[in-house]
Amino acid sequence: MALLYGEGNLAVPDETLNLTPLTSVRRNIVVIDLVESVKIMGLAEMQVVALWRAFLRQVEAVVDRTADAHLVKSLGDGLLLSCTDTEAATSLAFACHEELALITQDFALPMQLRCGIHVCDVYLDAIDVFGTGVNVAARLAGLSQPGEVTVSVEVRDLLSDCSDFELTDLGLCFVKHIDEPLRAFKLRRTATQTARQTPMLQPAPAGVSGDQHTADTPFDLRPVVAIIPFTVLRSDGASGAQDVAIGDAVADDVIAQLSRSRELRLLSRLSTSAFRRSRDGLLNDLQTRLKARYAVTGRMRPRSAEHFRVEAELVDVTSGEVLWADRFDLSVTALFAGDDLVVPSITRAVARSVADHEARRTRTLPFPNLDGFTLYTGAVTLLHRLSSTDFARAQSLLQHLNDRVPRSAPPLAMLAKWHIMRLVQGWSDNRARDGAAARDSARRALDIDPDDAFSLAIGGLAESIVGLDPSGAQTRYLAAVGANPNEAYAWALLSGTHSHMEQAPQALEAADRALSLSPLDPARFLFEAYRALALLVAGQPEAAESAARNSIAHNAMHAPSHRLLIIALAMRGDVAAAQAAVRVHERLVPGYRVQDFTRHYPGHGLPHAEVHSQALRSAGVPP
Image 1: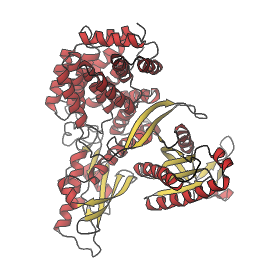
Image 2: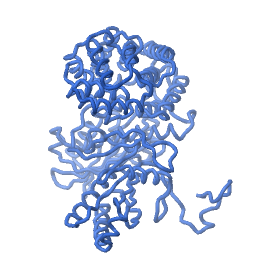
Image 3: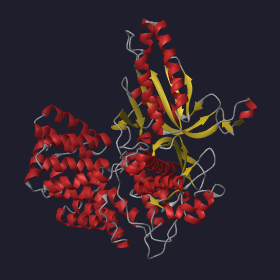
Image 4: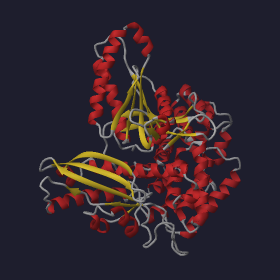
C-alpha cells in the first residue's frame, strides 16, 4: 500500500519511510471529550488527573469486555475508541458516562463528558486510526451537551427505533472545518423494547434474480438474504435432534421477522437447510445455487441445558465481507415462548446493516457498476433522510434504475414518491411539472404490476396531493391494504385521507395500525405525522403535539410535521411556543404562507381545514 505525501502525484511507499502499512476498514469511531477540562484542571489539577487515570482504567476494563472494541488513544482530557458494531459503540459511550459519574461522585467539581459517534471508512495501523471520519466524530462530540451522545446519520441508519436507544433529529448542523453541514442525532437510552413486525411486499416471481427479467414479469429489486440454520457446537462434538431443532427455531424466527421487511427477500429454511454443515465453498454455493446476496450464519455454544451463547454474523456473499457480527445470550425457554430479545436484535442489525451497505455503495461506486437492488435500496435510504444532497442523489439513482430495468414497478413508485415529497416539503420550483411526473410514474408502476400494494398506495398519494381528490385516493389505499394487509405505508396514507375527509376515528385506527406494523420502516416519521393530523381532526391538540414532536424527533427535516406542531400549539393557545415553531419552519421552507396551505391541502373547504388555517395565521405564518 502506498500513501501520497506532499502535492501532485508523488507517491512514496510506506516501506521507504519505514512506516507500518495501513489497513482500510469500516469502523464506528467514538470521540469522548471532558467538558471544560482546562477550567477544572486549573482549579484542582492533581485531583482531576488522579480521577481521569482511574476513569481510564475503568474504560480499559469496559473495552476488554466489549467484542471488537479498541481504545485507540487517551489525550489527557479525551478518548478515541473504535468498534466494529454500532450498538456496541453506543453502549460503550454510555458506559463511559456512567463510569465517570461513579468515579467522580464525591468530587466537588463537575466532571462530565461529551461523546460523538460516526461510522465510516478509516485507515488503521498498529497504534492509530486516520481519516476524515475521525474529525467528523470529533465535531459530533462538540455538538453534544454535557452528559450527551451525538451521532451521525450513518450511525442512525444502523440503529433501530426499537433498540435500547431513542434518537432525536437535530437537523443539519454547521461545524467548523467541514464544508457540508452534518446531519446529527441526539441519542438517549430507553428501556429495551421487543421488535414489532414490518410490512411485506408480494413475494418475488419464481426464477427472477439479479438484473434478469422478462417482458411480462415485474422485476423484484430486493436483495436475497439466506438465513442458514444455526449450528450448535458442543465440546464433545456430539449434536442431537434437539440441537438441530433449536438452531432451526432461531433461523425460522429470524426469517419470519425479516420477511416482513419491504426491502428484503428471504429464502425459506427448506432452501437453506442443505447448507447447515457447509463451510468450504458455502458463499459460492449460496450465490450460484440460491442467487443470494447476503447470508446470516450463526453458532450456538451451550452454557447450560437452558442457555446458549449465540454468535451471529451477516456476510456479503459476493465479496465475503463480514458486515456485522455480535454475540448474545439465549434462553431456550424464552425463545420458544416468543419472549427472547436475541432474534429481534439480529433482525434489527441485519436490516440496518444491509441498508447501510447498499447506501454506501451508491455513494462510492459509479452507477454502471452497481446492482439493481443496490441502486434501489440505496435510493430509498437516501430519500428518507430529506437532506438536499441525499435527496438529489436519490432521484439520480431512481432515474438511472428506471432506464436500466424498465419493467420494474418499485423504482417507478418510489420515483413518484420522490416528486410528491418534493411538493410537500415545499422544495418544488414547478408544482405542475412535479405533480405530472408523480402521476405519470405512479401510473407506469401500476401498468407493470396492478396488484402491488406499495404502487397502489403511491397512486393514491398522487391523487390526494396532486389531484386533491381524497375520495379517489381512499379507493386506491383500500385496494392496497386489500392486496397486502401488512403494507404499513398504505395504512398510514389511508389515515391521512380519513383525516382529510373528517373521519377522525377511522384515521386514528389506520394510523395506529401503520405504527404497529412498521417500527423499522424508514418512513416511520410519516406515520407519526399522519397520527398527529388524525388527532388534530379529532380535536385533541395536546396529543397531536406529542405525535408531531415524535415525528420531528425521527426526522427534523420533514416540513409538514413542523406545520402540524404549529397548528397543535396554536390550537392549545400556547402562542409563544407556536411562534417559535414557526421560526423553525421558516428555515426549512422560506417564504411559506397560509395561502400555500389552503391551496394545496387535500381537505381544503372542510371545517377543520379552516381551523388549521386560522391556527397558522394566529401563530404568525404570513397570510
